[in-house]
Length: 333
Length: 249
Image (cartoon, rainbow over all chains, first blue to last red; front, top):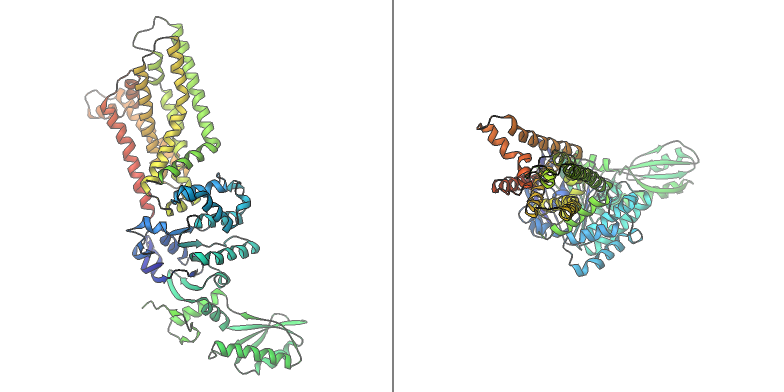
Protein backbone atom coordinates (compact mmCIF):
# COMPACT_ATOMS: atom_id res chain seq x y z
CA UNK A 1 0.00 0.00 0.00
CA UNK A 2 2.83 2.37 0.90
CA UNK A 3 6.34 2.10 -0.37
CA UNK A 4 8.88 4.63 0.84
CA UNK A 5 12.48 4.52 -0.21
CA UNK A 6 15.30 6.80 0.91
CA UNK A 7 12.91 9.60 1.79
CA UNK A 8 14.59 12.82 2.89
CA UNK A 9 12.91 16.11 3.65
CA UNK A 10 14.74 19.33 4.52
CA UNK A 11 13.40 22.66 5.74
CA UNK A 12 16.22 24.93 4.70
CA UNK A 13 19.29 23.61 6.47
CA UNK A 14 17.30 21.56 8.96
CA UNK A 15 16.75 17.89 8.12
CA UNK A 16 13.32 16.79 9.30
CA UNK A 17 13.30 13.33 7.73
CA UNK A 18 16.60 11.65 7.01
CA UNK A 19 16.85 8.79 4.51
CA UNK A 20 13.86 6.80 5.71
CA UNK A 21 12.69 3.63 3.94
CA UNK A 22 9.78 1.36 4.83
CA UNK A 23 6.85 -0.53 3.39
CA UNK A 24 3.31 -0.82 4.64
CA UNK A 25 1.20 -3.71 3.37
CA UNK A 26 -2.51 -3.76 2.68
CA UNK A 27 -4.66 -4.12 5.79
CA UNK A 28 -1.93 -3.26 8.29
CA UNK A 29 -2.40 -0.82 11.14
CA UNK A 30 0.96 0.86 11.51
CA UNK A 31 1.93 3.19 14.31
CA UNK A 32 4.56 5.88 13.87
CA UNK A 33 6.11 6.29 17.27
CA UNK A 34 8.50 9.02 18.25
CA UNK A 35 8.91 12.01 20.52
CA UNK A 36 7.68 15.43 19.41
CA UNK A 37 9.74 16.83 16.58
CA UNK A 38 10.98 13.42 15.47
CA UNK A 39 9.72 13.90 11.90
CA UNK A 40 6.45 11.97 12.21
CA UNK A 41 4.19 14.76 10.99
CA UNK A 42 6.51 15.63 8.13
CA UNK A 43 6.56 12.01 6.97
CA UNK A 44 2.78 11.72 7.16
CA UNK A 45 2.33 15.01 5.31
CA UNK A 46 4.50 13.70 2.52
CA UNK A 47 2.49 10.47 2.40
CA UNK A 48 -0.72 12.52 2.25
CA UNK A 49 0.64 14.67 -0.59
CA UNK A 50 0.71 17.95 1.30
CA UNK A 51 4.48 18.26 1.27
CA UNK A 52 6.91 17.13 -1.38
CA UNK A 53 9.97 15.04 -0.59
CA UNK A 54 13.37 16.71 -0.94
CA UNK A 55 14.68 13.42 -2.26
CA UNK A 56 13.68 9.79 -2.35
CA UNK A 57 10.48 8.29 -3.61
CA UNK A 58 7.09 7.61 -2.06
CA UNK A 59 4.45 5.44 -3.70
CA UNK A 60 0.86 5.11 -2.48
CA UNK A 61 -0.93 2.09 -3.97
CA UNK A 62 1.58 2.23 -6.82
CA UNK A 63 1.13 5.95 -7.50
CA UNK A 64 4.16 8.19 -7.02
CA UNK A 65 3.24 11.15 -4.79
CA UNK A 66 5.16 13.57 -6.99
CA UNK A 67 4.53 12.37 -10.54
CA UNK A 68 1.06 10.99 -9.98
CA UNK A 69 0.07 13.13 -7.00
CA UNK A 70 -3.57 13.34 -7.98
CA UNK A 71 -4.18 9.59 -8.07
CA UNK A 72 -2.07 9.10 -4.95
CA UNK A 73 -4.19 11.61 -3.05
CA UNK A 74 -7.38 9.87 -4.17
CA UNK A 75 -6.23 6.74 -2.32
CA UNK A 76 -5.62 8.56 0.97
CA UNK A 77 -7.89 9.85 3.69
CA UNK A 78 -5.80 12.15 5.84
CA UNK A 79 -6.50 13.73 9.19
CA UNK A 80 -3.94 16.43 10.00
CA UNK A 81 -2.80 17.01 13.57
CA UNK A 82 -5.45 18.90 15.61
CA UNK A 83 -7.95 18.22 12.77
CA UNK A 84 -8.38 21.72 11.33
CA UNK A 85 -11.94 22.27 10.06
CA UNK A 86 -14.04 25.15 8.76
CA UNK A 87 -15.70 26.49 11.93
CA UNK A 88 -18.58 28.24 10.17
CA UNK A 89 -19.94 25.05 8.59
CA UNK A 90 -22.31 22.50 10.04
CA UNK A 91 -20.90 19.00 10.42
CA UNK A 92 -23.06 17.42 7.73
CA UNK A 93 -22.50 20.35 5.33
CA UNK A 94 -18.78 20.09 5.86
CA UNK A 95 -18.70 16.35 5.24
CA UNK A 96 -20.85 16.63 2.10
CA UNK A 97 -18.50 19.33 0.84
CA UNK A 98 -15.55 17.06 1.53
CA UNK A 99 -17.25 14.12 -0.13
CA UNK A 100 -17.90 16.17 -3.25
CA UNK A 101 -14.33 17.44 -3.23
CA UNK A 102 -13.08 13.87 -2.97
CA UNK A 103 -15.20 12.87 -5.96
CA UNK A 104 -17.73 10.68 -4.22
CA UNK A 105 -20.42 10.13 -6.88
CA UNK A 106 -23.46 12.32 -6.35
CA UNK A 107 -25.87 9.43 -5.75
CA UNK A 108 -23.64 7.93 -3.03
CA UNK A 109 -22.80 11.17 -1.28
CA UNK A 110 -25.59 11.27 1.30
CA UNK A 111 -25.27 7.61 2.27
CA UNK A 112 -21.47 7.64 2.43
CA UNK A 113 -21.49 10.77 4.59
CA UNK A 114 -24.04 9.15 6.91
CA UNK A 115 -21.95 6.02 7.11
CA UNK A 116 -18.78 7.99 7.91
CA UNK A 117 -20.63 9.97 10.57
CA UNK A 118 -21.88 6.73 12.07
CA UNK A 119 -18.42 5.16 12.16
CA UNK A 120 -16.85 8.25 13.69
CA UNK A 121 -19.73 8.73 16.12
CA UNK A 122 -20.82 12.23 15.13
CA UNK A 123 -24.41 11.54 14.04
CA UNK A 124 -25.78 13.29 17.14
CA UNK A 125 -24.00 16.56 16.25
CA UNK A 126 -24.60 16.38 12.48
CA UNK A 127 -26.49 19.67 12.32
CA UNK A 128 -24.28 21.60 14.75
CA UNK A 129 -21.80 24.21 13.67
CA UNK A 130 -18.23 22.97 13.92
CA UNK A 131 -17.31 26.13 15.89
CA UNK A 132 -19.63 24.95 18.69
CA UNK A 133 -18.17 21.44 18.97
CA UNK A 134 -15.90 20.20 21.72
CA UNK A 135 -12.34 19.17 20.93
CA UNK A 136 -13.25 15.49 21.04
CA UNK A 137 -16.06 15.92 18.56
CA UNK A 138 -13.92 17.99 16.21
CA UNK A 139 -11.36 15.23 16.20
CA UNK A 140 -14.10 12.76 15.28
CA UNK A 141 -15.37 15.00 12.50
CA UNK A 142 -11.79 15.01 11.19
CA UNK A 143 -11.88 11.24 11.35
CA UNK A 144 -15.20 11.12 9.50
CA UNK A 145 -13.66 13.38 6.85
CA UNK A 146 -10.70 11.01 6.48
CA UNK A 147 -12.93 8.01 5.77
CA UNK A 148 -15.83 9.67 3.93
CA UNK A 149 -14.58 8.78 0.44
CA UNK A 150 -13.79 5.20 1.54
CA UNK A 151 -10.07 5.47 0.78
CA UNK A 152 -8.00 2.29 0.96
CA UNK A 153 -5.44 4.12 3.12
CA UNK A 154 -6.22 6.27 6.16
CA UNK A 155 -3.51 8.47 7.67
CA UNK A 156 -4.11 9.94 11.12
CA UNK A 157 -1.67 12.41 12.63
CA UNK A 158 -1.85 12.26 16.43
CA UNK A 159 -5.50 11.15 16.49
CA UNK A 160 -5.75 11.35 20.29
CA UNK A 161 -3.76 14.51 20.99
CA UNK A 162 -5.57 16.81 23.38
CA UNK A 163 -8.39 14.40 24.23
CA UNK A 164 -9.43 13.35 27.72
CA UNK A 165 -8.96 9.70 28.80
CA UNK A 166 -12.52 8.69 27.92
CA UNK A 167 -12.29 10.25 24.48
CA UNK A 168 -8.91 8.61 23.97
CA UNK A 169 -10.41 5.22 24.68
CA UNK A 170 -13.22 5.90 22.22
CA UNK A 171 -10.86 7.19 19.56
CA UNK A 172 -8.70 4.08 19.90
CA UNK A 173 -11.75 1.89 19.51
CA UNK A 174 -12.66 3.75 16.32
CA UNK A 175 -9.13 3.35 14.96
CA UNK A 176 -9.15 -0.39 15.68
CA UNK A 177 -12.50 -0.58 13.92
CA UNK A 178 -11.07 1.27 10.92
CA UNK A 179 -8.32 -1.32 10.70
CA UNK A 180 -10.84 -3.86 9.47
CA UNK A 181 -11.63 -2.06 6.22
CA UNK A 182 -8.65 0.22 5.69
CA UNK A 183 -4.90 0.26 5.89
CA UNK A 184 -4.22 2.69 8.71
CA UNK A 185 -1.11 4.70 9.48
CA UNK A 186 -1.17 6.76 12.65
CA UNK A 187 1.39 8.73 14.57
CA UNK A 188 1.77 9.22 18.27
CA UNK A 189 4.31 10.03 20.93
CA UNK A 190 2.55 7.82 23.46
CA UNK A 191 3.81 4.27 23.72
CA UNK A 192 0.52 2.90 25.03
CA UNK A 193 -1.24 4.24 22.01
CA UNK A 194 0.49 2.04 19.46
CA UNK A 195 0.15 -0.92 21.78
CA UNK A 196 -3.58 -0.30 21.88
CA UNK A 197 -4.12 0.27 18.16
CA UNK A 198 -1.32 -0.85 15.90
CA UNK A 199 -0.16 -4.22 14.62
CA UNK A 200 3.22 -2.88 13.60
CA UNK A 201 5.37 -0.06 14.86
CA UNK A 202 7.90 2.25 13.22
CA UNK A 203 10.14 4.02 15.70
CA UNK A 204 11.36 7.35 14.46
CA UNK A 205 13.76 9.68 16.20
CA UNK A 206 15.60 12.78 14.94
CA UNK A 207 14.22 12.09 11.46
CA UNK A 208 15.70 8.61 11.31
CA UNK A 209 13.93 5.29 11.39
CA UNK A 210 15.35 3.62 14.48
CA UNK A 211 13.57 0.29 14.43
CA UNK A 212 10.48 -1.37 13.12
CA UNK A 213 8.62 -4.51 14.05
CA UNK A 214 5.38 -5.99 15.29
CA UNK A 215 3.79 -4.34 18.30
CA UNK A 216 4.68 -7.34 20.50
CA UNK A 217 8.33 -6.48 19.98
CA UNK A 218 7.81 -3.03 21.39
CA UNK A 219 5.84 -4.50 24.25
CA UNK A 220 8.74 -6.87 24.93
CA UNK A 221 11.26 -4.03 24.84
CA UNK A 222 9.13 -2.21 27.30
CA UNK A 223 8.84 -5.20 29.62
CA UNK A 224 12.49 -6.05 29.22
CA UNK A 225 13.87 -3.60 31.73
CA UNK A 226 12.05 -4.43 34.94
CA UNK A 227 8.84 -5.26 36.74
CA UNK A 228 7.34 -3.46 39.66
CA UNK A 229 5.70 -5.41 42.49
CA UNK A 230 3.38 -3.81 44.95
CA UNK A 231 3.97 -5.75 48.14
CA UNK A 232 1.98 -5.78 51.35
CA UNK A 233 4.00 -6.20 54.52
CA UNK A 234 7.66 -5.84 55.45
CA UNK A 235 9.52 -4.15 52.59
CA UNK A 236 12.96 -5.26 53.74
CA UNK A 237 11.84 -8.87 53.82
CA UNK A 238 10.47 -8.60 50.32
CA UNK A 239 13.73 -7.18 49.00
CA UNK A 240 15.70 -9.96 50.63
CA UNK A 241 13.36 -12.64 49.28
CA UNK A 242 13.46 -11.20 45.75
CA UNK A 243 17.23 -10.85 45.63
CA UNK A 244 17.50 -14.58 46.17
CA UNK A 245 15.39 -15.40 43.10
CA UNK A 246 17.39 -16.75 40.12
CA UNK A 247 17.41 -14.28 37.21
CA UNK A 248 16.96 -11.21 39.35
CA UNK A 249 19.83 -8.74 39.15
CA UNK A 250 18.52 -6.19 41.58
CA UNK A 251 15.50 -5.62 43.80
CA UNK A 252 14.97 -2.35 45.59
CA UNK A 253 12.08 -0.62 47.29
CA UNK A 254 10.92 2.44 45.42
CA UNK A 255 9.04 5.03 47.36
CA UNK A 256 8.21 5.14 51.05
CA UNK A 257 7.55 1.94 53.00
CA UNK A 258 4.08 1.72 54.45
CA UNK A 259 1.39 -0.90 54.52
CA UNK A 260 2.20 -1.53 50.88
CA UNK A 261 5.57 -0.89 49.21
CA UNK A 262 6.56 -0.69 45.58
CA UNK A 263 9.56 -2.88 44.83
CA UNK A 264 11.28 -2.57 41.46
CA UNK A 265 12.87 -5.80 40.27
CA UNK A 266 15.47 -5.56 37.52
CA UNK A 267 16.15 -8.78 35.65
CA UNK A 268 19.49 -10.05 34.50
CA UNK A 269 20.21 -8.87 30.98
CA UNK A 270 20.76 -12.30 29.49
CA UNK A 271 17.20 -13.46 30.16
CA UNK A 272 14.97 -13.84 27.12
CA UNK A 273 11.26 -13.10 26.93
CA UNK A 274 10.34 -16.51 28.31
CA UNK A 275 13.02 -16.31 30.97
CA UNK A 276 11.71 -12.98 32.18
CA UNK A 277 8.18 -14.36 32.36
CA UNK A 278 9.39 -17.32 34.44
CA UNK A 279 11.46 -15.06 36.66
CA UNK A 280 8.40 -12.87 37.24
CA UNK A 281 6.45 -15.92 38.40
CA UNK A 282 9.32 -16.96 40.69
CA UNK A 283 9.41 -13.44 42.15
CA UNK A 284 5.73 -13.57 43.03
CA UNK A 285 6.15 -17.03 44.52
CA UNK A 286 9.14 -15.85 46.57
CA UNK A 287 7.24 -12.90 48.01
CA UNK A 288 4.23 -15.05 48.83
CA UNK A 289 6.59 -17.70 50.25
CA UNK A 290 8.03 -15.08 52.61
CA UNK A 291 4.57 -14.61 54.06
CA UNK A 292 3.90 -11.32 52.30
CA UNK A 293 1.11 -10.32 49.90
CA UNK A 294 1.37 -9.28 46.26
CA UNK A 295 -1.13 -6.59 45.32
CA UNK A 296 0.05 -5.74 41.78
CA UNK A 297 2.63 -6.75 39.21
CA UNK A 298 3.33 -4.37 36.35
CA UNK A 299 6.08 -3.69 33.85
CA UNK A 300 8.36 -0.85 34.88
CA UNK A 301 10.88 1.39 33.22
CA UNK A 302 9.22 0.90 29.86
CA UNK A 303 8.62 4.51 28.99
CA UNK A 304 9.19 5.71 25.47
CA UNK A 305 12.32 7.48 26.67
CA UNK A 306 13.71 4.21 28.07
CA UNK A 307 13.00 2.38 24.82
CA UNK A 308 14.68 5.12 22.82
CA UNK A 309 17.57 5.28 25.24
CA UNK A 310 18.16 1.54 24.95
CA UNK A 311 17.90 1.67 21.17
CA UNK A 312 20.22 4.61 20.70
CA UNK A 313 22.69 3.06 23.15
CA UNK A 314 22.64 -0.15 21.14
CA UNK A 315 23.17 1.68 17.87
CA UNK A 316 26.36 2.97 19.46
CA UNK A 317 27.83 -0.51 19.01
CA UNK A 318 27.07 -2.12 22.34
CA UNK A 319 25.79 -5.66 22.77
CA UNK A 320 22.69 -6.32 20.73
CA UNK A 321 20.78 -7.92 23.56
CA UNK A 322 18.15 -5.33 24.39
CA UNK A 323 17.19 -5.26 20.76
CA UNK A 324 13.97 -6.64 19.35
CA UNK A 325 14.13 -10.32 18.62
CA UNK A 326 11.63 -10.44 15.78
CA UNK A 327 11.92 -6.86 14.58
CA UNK A 328 14.24 -5.52 11.96
CA UNK A 329 16.92 -3.18 13.20
CA UNK A 330 17.53 -0.29 10.87
CA UNK A 331 21.16 0.51 10.45
CA UNK A 332 22.06 3.88 9.12
CA UNK A 333 25.40 2.76 7.76
CA UNK B 1 -11.24 21.10 -12.64
CA UNK B 2 -14.03 19.01 -11.12
CA UNK B 3 -13.06 20.38 -7.72
CA UNK B 4 -13.78 23.95 -8.86
CA UNK B 5 -17.50 23.80 -8.14
CA UNK B 6 -17.49 22.52 -4.53
CA UNK B 7 -14.72 24.96 -3.51
CA UNK B 8 -16.51 27.85 -5.24
CA UNK B 9 -19.75 27.06 -3.40
CA UNK B 10 -17.97 26.75 -0.06
CA UNK B 11 -16.08 30.01 -0.51
CA UNK B 12 -19.29 31.91 -1.25
CA UNK B 13 -20.95 30.24 1.70
CA UNK B 14 -18.06 31.07 4.02
CA UNK B 15 -18.12 34.70 2.89
CA UNK B 16 -21.83 35.19 3.37
CA UNK B 17 -22.17 33.50 6.77
CA UNK B 18 -19.68 35.92 8.29
CA UNK B 19 -20.78 39.43 9.25
CA UNK B 20 -17.81 40.82 7.29
CA UNK B 21 -19.54 40.32 3.93
CA UNK B 22 -22.71 42.05 5.01
CA UNK B 23 -20.85 44.94 6.62
CA UNK B 24 -18.87 45.45 3.42
CA UNK B 25 -21.98 45.31 1.25
CA UNK B 26 -23.89 47.70 3.47
CA UNK B 27 -21.00 50.18 3.58
CA UNK B 28 -20.67 49.92 -0.18
CA UNK B 29 -24.36 50.45 -0.90
CA UNK B 30 -24.68 53.34 1.56
CA UNK B 31 -21.71 55.13 -0.01
CA UNK B 32 -22.91 54.46 -3.55
CA UNK B 33 -26.47 55.46 -2.67
CA UNK B 34 -25.34 58.78 -1.21
CA UNK B 35 -23.12 59.32 -4.19
CA UNK B 36 -25.98 58.70 -6.57
CA UNK B 37 -28.35 60.93 -4.62
CA UNK B 38 -25.89 63.83 -4.56
CA UNK B 39 -25.18 63.51 -8.27
CA UNK B 40 -28.83 63.40 -9.29
CA UNK B 41 -29.53 66.31 -6.97
CA UNK B 42 -26.64 68.24 -8.49
CA UNK B 43 -27.78 67.63 -12.07
CA UNK B 44 -31.42 68.38 -11.24
CA UNK B 45 -30.47 71.84 -9.94
CA UNK B 46 -28.60 72.69 -13.15
CA UNK B 47 -30.84 71.81 -16.09
CA UNK B 48 -28.60 73.72 -18.53
CA UNK B 49 -25.47 71.72 -17.77
CA UNK B 50 -23.08 70.81 -20.62
CA UNK B 51 -24.09 67.95 -22.93
CA UNK B 52 -21.14 65.57 -22.47
CA UNK B 53 -21.47 65.41 -18.70
CA UNK B 54 -24.24 63.07 -17.57
CA UNK B 55 -25.10 61.59 -14.16
CA UNK B 56 -23.91 58.27 -15.54
CA UNK B 57 -20.46 59.47 -16.58
CA UNK B 58 -20.13 61.34 -13.31
CA UNK B 59 -21.15 58.29 -11.29
CA UNK B 60 -18.58 55.97 -12.83
CA UNK B 61 -15.89 58.29 -14.14
CA UNK B 62 -14.42 61.51 -12.86
CA UNK B 63 -15.05 60.56 -9.27
CA UNK B 64 -12.68 59.61 -6.53
CA UNK B 65 -15.43 57.69 -4.77
CA UNK B 66 -15.19 54.65 -7.02
CA UNK B 67 -11.51 54.13 -6.14
CA UNK B 68 -11.97 54.94 -2.49
CA UNK B 69 -14.66 52.29 -2.31
CA UNK B 70 -12.56 49.72 -4.15
CA UNK B 71 -9.58 50.64 -2.02
CA UNK B 72 -11.58 49.99 1.14
CA UNK B 73 -13.50 46.93 -0.09
CA UNK B 74 -11.10 44.80 -2.09
CA UNK B 75 -8.40 44.14 0.55
CA UNK B 76 -10.82 42.79 3.19
CA UNK B 77 -12.62 40.75 0.54
CA UNK B 78 -9.54 38.86 -0.58
CA UNK B 79 -7.40 38.82 2.55
CA UNK B 80 -8.96 35.64 3.94
CA UNK B 81 -8.80 33.53 0.79
CA UNK B 82 -5.53 31.74 1.45
CA UNK B 83 -4.01 33.45 4.46
CA UNK B 84 -6.80 32.31 6.78
CA UNK B 85 -6.64 28.71 5.56
CA UNK B 86 -2.92 28.62 6.08
CA UNK B 87 -3.14 30.15 9.54
CA UNK B 88 -5.83 27.75 10.72
CA UNK B 89 -4.28 24.74 8.97
CA UNK B 90 -7.35 23.91 6.90
CA UNK B 91 -5.22 24.35 3.80
CA UNK B 92 -3.61 21.02 4.68
CA UNK B 93 -6.98 19.33 4.47
CA UNK B 94 -7.91 21.16 1.30
CA UNK B 95 -4.70 20.38 -0.59
CA UNK B 96 -4.57 16.71 0.42
CA UNK B 97 -7.91 16.16 -1.30
CA UNK B 98 -7.57 15.31 -4.99
CA UNK B 99 -7.63 18.93 -6.20
CA UNK B 100 -5.35 20.87 -8.52
CA UNK B 101 -3.79 24.16 -7.42
CA UNK B 102 -5.29 25.84 -10.48
CA UNK B 103 -8.79 24.74 -9.55
CA UNK B 104 -8.33 25.97 -5.97
CA UNK B 105 -7.06 29.39 -7.08
CA UNK B 106 -9.71 29.81 -9.77
CA UNK B 107 -12.55 28.72 -7.47
CA UNK B 108 -11.49 31.14 -4.76
CA UNK B 109 -11.10 33.92 -7.31
CA UNK B 110 -14.48 33.21 -8.92
CA UNK B 111 -16.08 33.36 -5.48
CA UNK B 112 -14.71 36.83 -4.63
CA UNK B 113 -15.55 38.05 -8.12
CA UNK B 114 -19.12 36.79 -7.73
CA UNK B 115 -19.37 38.63 -4.41
CA UNK B 116 -18.08 41.77 -6.07
CA UNK B 117 -20.67 41.51 -8.84
CA UNK B 118 -23.37 40.88 -6.25
CA UNK B 119 -22.30 44.09 -4.50
CA UNK B 120 -22.73 46.13 -7.64
CA UNK B 121 -25.95 44.47 -8.73
CA UNK B 122 -28.32 46.68 -6.66
CA UNK B 123 -26.79 49.78 -8.29
CA UNK B 124 -28.44 48.69 -11.55
CA UNK B 125 -31.61 50.08 -9.96
CA UNK B 126 -30.07 53.55 -10.31
CA UNK B 127 -29.97 53.03 -14.05
CA UNK B 128 -33.60 52.02 -14.02
CA UNK B 129 -34.42 55.21 -12.11
CA UNK B 130 -32.37 57.33 -14.52
CA UNK B 131 -33.94 55.60 -17.52
CA UNK B 132 -37.45 56.22 -16.20
CA UNK B 133 -36.93 59.90 -15.48
CA UNK B 134 -34.78 60.94 -18.39
CA UNK B 135 -32.70 59.76 -21.29
CA UNK B 136 -30.10 57.12 -20.62
CA UNK B 137 -27.34 56.00 -22.95
CA UNK B 138 -27.58 52.23 -22.39
CA UNK B 139 -24.45 51.64 -24.43
CA UNK B 140 -22.45 53.90 -22.12
CA UNK B 141 -24.05 52.23 -19.10
CA UNK B 142 -23.00 48.81 -20.33
CA UNK B 143 -19.46 49.96 -20.98
CA UNK B 144 -19.34 51.63 -17.56
CA UNK B 145 -20.31 48.36 -15.90
CA UNK B 146 -17.76 46.55 -18.04
CA UNK B 147 -15.19 49.02 -16.68
CA UNK B 148 -16.32 48.41 -13.11
CA UNK B 149 -16.08 44.67 -13.66
CA UNK B 150 -12.62 44.86 -15.21
CA UNK B 151 -11.15 47.17 -12.57
CA UNK B 152 -12.65 45.02 -9.81
CA UNK B 153 -11.47 41.79 -11.44
CA UNK B 154 -7.91 43.13 -11.67
CA UNK B 155 -7.87 44.40 -8.10
CA UNK B 156 -9.36 41.20 -6.68
CA UNK B 157 -6.78 39.16 -8.55
CA UNK B 158 -4.02 41.24 -6.97
CA UNK B 159 -5.63 40.81 -3.56
CA UNK B 160 -5.91 37.05 -3.97
CA UNK B 161 -2.26 36.86 -4.97
CA UNK B 162 -1.24 38.83 -1.86
CA UNK B 163 -3.29 36.44 0.26
CA UNK B 164 -1.49 33.46 -1.25
CA UNK B 165 1.90 35.00 -0.52
CA UNK B 166 1.47 35.50 3.21
CA UNK B 167 0.21 33.58 6.21
CA UNK B 168 -1.31 36.63 7.87
CA UNK B 169 -4.65 38.10 6.84
CA UNK B 170 -3.58 41.47 8.09
CA UNK B 171 -0.43 41.49 5.96
CA UNK B 172 -2.44 40.33 2.96
CA UNK B 173 -4.78 43.27 3.47
CA UNK B 174 -1.95 45.77 3.90
CA UNK B 175 -0.09 44.50 0.85
CA UNK B 176 -3.19 44.64 -1.31
CA UNK B 177 -4.00 48.15 -0.16
CA UNK B 178 -0.42 49.25 -0.81
CA UNK B 179 -0.37 47.86 -4.33
CA UNK B 180 -3.73 49.46 -5.14
CA UNK B 181 -2.45 52.73 -3.72
CA UNK B 182 0.66 52.56 -5.90
CA UNK B 183 -1.54 51.95 -8.95
CA UNK B 184 -3.71 54.92 -8.04
CA UNK B 185 -0.74 57.21 -7.43
CA UNK B 186 0.83 56.14 -10.74
CA UNK B 187 -2.52 57.00 -12.34
CA UNK B 188 -2.47 60.47 -10.86
CA UNK B 189 1.00 60.77 -12.30
CA UNK B 190 -0.69 61.18 -15.65
CA UNK B 191 -1.67 64.69 -14.65
CA UNK B 192 1.64 65.78 -13.13
CA UNK B 193 4.20 64.32 -15.55
CA UNK B 194 5.25 66.03 -18.75
CA UNK B 195 3.30 64.92 -21.79
CA UNK B 196 5.45 62.88 -24.17
CA UNK B 197 7.79 61.52 -21.49
CA UNK B 198 8.07 57.78 -20.92
CA UNK B 199 6.78 58.21 -17.37
CA UNK B 200 3.72 59.96 -18.69
CA UNK B 201 3.02 57.09 -21.09
CA UNK B 202 3.34 54.55 -18.27
CA UNK B 203 1.10 56.56 -15.95
CA UNK B 204 -1.48 57.04 -18.64
CA UNK B 205 -1.50 53.33 -19.36
CA UNK B 206 -2.17 52.28 -15.76
CA UNK B 207 -4.43 55.18 -14.75
CA UNK B 208 -7.66 53.71 -13.44
CA UNK B 209 -9.07 57.21 -13.34
CA UNK B 210 -8.61 57.74 -17.06
CA UNK B 211 -9.77 54.20 -17.84
CA UNK B 212 -13.01 54.66 -15.97
CA UNK B 213 -13.58 58.03 -17.63
CA UNK B 214 -13.38 56.28 -21.00
CA UNK B 215 -15.63 53.42 -19.95
CA UNK B 216 -18.17 55.78 -18.39
CA UNK B 217 -18.58 57.67 -21.64
CA UNK B 218 -18.97 54.49 -23.68
CA UNK B 219 -15.42 54.11 -25.02
CA UNK B 220 -14.14 50.53 -24.89
CA UNK B 221 -10.47 50.65 -25.82
CA UNK B 222 -8.81 47.32 -26.58
CA UNK B 223 -5.63 48.49 -24.79
CA UNK B 224 -7.69 48.67 -21.59
CA UNK B 225 -9.00 45.17 -22.17
CA UNK B 226 -5.47 43.85 -22.59
CA UNK B 227 -4.27 45.77 -19.52
CA UNK B 228 -6.99 44.39 -17.25
CA UNK B 229 -6.75 40.96 -18.82
CA UNK B 230 -3.08 40.95 -17.80
CA UNK B 231 -3.93 42.32 -14.38
CA UNK B 232 -6.25 39.35 -13.83
CA UNK B 233 -4.15 36.57 -15.33
CA UNK B 234 -0.70 37.46 -14.02
CA UNK B 235 -1.49 37.60 -10.27
CA UNK B 236 -3.62 34.46 -10.56
CA UNK B 237 -0.71 32.69 -12.20
CA UNK B 238 1.64 33.85 -9.44
CA UNK B 239 -0.90 32.70 -6.83
CA UNK B 240 -1.07 29.25 -8.43
CA UNK B 241 2.70 28.97 -8.41
CA UNK B 242 2.73 30.11 -4.77
CA UNK B 243 0.25 27.39 -3.83
CA UNK B 244 2.44 24.82 -5.59
CA UNK B 245 5.50 26.24 -3.87
CA UNK B 246 4.16 25.61 -0.33
CA UNK B 247 4.60 21.93 -1.03
CA UNK B 248 8.32 22.43 -1.41
CA UNK B 249 8.94 25.45 0.80
